[in-house]
Length: 364
Ligand code: PMP
Image (cartoon, rainbow, N blue to C red; front, side, top):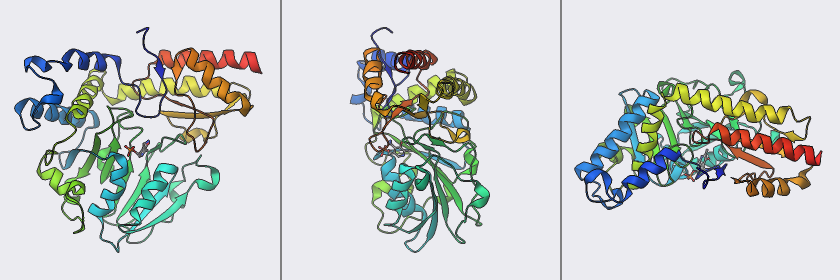
């Protein structure tokens, strides 16, 4: 629609227009119930149908095996940085973190309050532009889990394949906040997957945890009830009042992704969009530059710099005038970052690329 911008924000981020319009049409009176989803009891049959449908559609999308629980929680992915060690470890347990960016680093630091984490690889000295080769990882004997951040939102590095934990009974855990539902994932390779909703699947306020059932029920004794997966699993995410409206919005997005043909189709679109943008960067004769190693460039968050950094502010300003917003890189790395989540249409990326070419022609 002409009154909408192209929003390249990293999160909260663009949502599908048809989902927003559907929510608008149902906002005042949800499907004849005479009330808005925001006004409903979370224990009433209407809301139960909403959360159950959301879970069922997510299970369809990711082909989630029946021995996994899906939890709709609060507190953002940041809360999971603590909840994971509290639920999966005792204070003396060893665990491994592969640190490919700032989010992985935050998760690692938080875990050190609740168990004995080791950063077994860090991309920091290369400014977080790489993913390690899995053979070279020195995994800790006896570690309980191996944690990765599947897509580093700030640095734009994405795992294209996943390491296998070395120890018997050790599990792989992934923060998928910024590439959740952007492509198919074999959930059975993971003990736990978690994601804040506000990039690909909904508004902020909902955090999704997908966890193998046998990992539930061994939380450290000091674990707050709100962080205890067993409490939430036993109560079908309704132990206390959940973020009802956010869960409803996630449900509409899941329904839309199913209608698009599922994550195989969604991934095709994402690959195409990312190619258009990375090709433009690669073909710019160095005017634009992406620091990330080509094979691990993110399909979701595309960071790049200008050979003349003094032009970056002008780039962002001029793009905003053409209704392309939120292109400034994260304050910790600078430069430009275009986040092109599921709901960013190809037309948005094509418009950005046309602008980039024009900007270069005027400033090269
Ligand atoms: N992990 C990743 C990969 C993220 O991108 C973010 C948010 N940008 C977080 C964790 C933190 O999420 P939240 O703000 O939901 O706590």
